Length: 66
Image (tube, one colour):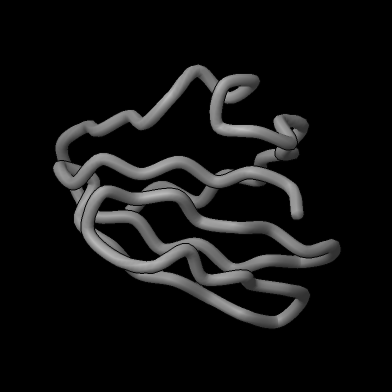
């Protein structure tokens, strides 16, 4: 696993470039703000500071600001 800090700017799925997938597993911990997770697999959960998410990168997903 390679730790990375990312800043999320997109507020819509279109701004983010649609759903995306890649090889590997992902662990996300949200340090501030609120986001919504788009996926073709499950309902759109809203996550906020302190929440985390682990998912298979091969499944199409995208994270956007809430």
